[in-house]
Amino acid sequence: MPSTTQTAHPQMGLLIAGDFPRRFATVTIAAGQVLAAGSVLGEVTASKEFKLSEAAAGDGSEKPSVVLWEAVDATEGAVPAETMLTGDLRASALTLGDGHTVASVRKALRPFSLFVHG
Image (cartoon, rainbow, N blue to C red; front, top):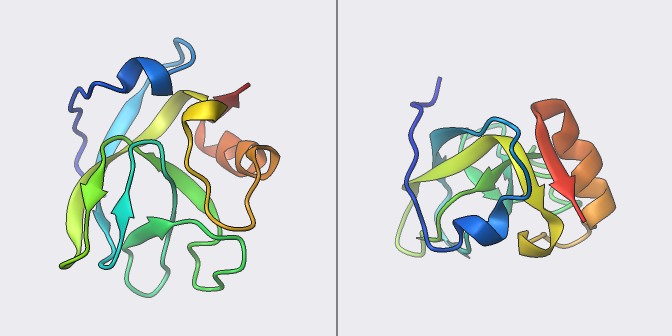
């Protein structure tokens, strides 16, 4: 199970949309990505690493499951990063991968108690 953490960042007010309890966990971000806070991520089944969720991925990451809490640069290799496991999120602050819409992400994240508003 990922460790639970929380790091404040300047965009917190832009990302948070309500007062549903927030929970965080550190996950491994797959190499080859530069991601903004608010990126919607999916877990690659084989590696258990996370990457920007794209609807046509086919490796497990096509299913959104967490939202990146902090900006990360994984261009040189996989890196740990904090993600939101639960909470209220502003749709306008999310970064969506190809093939996803606010509606598709809202539906996919709801079972994880991540609620997308707006």
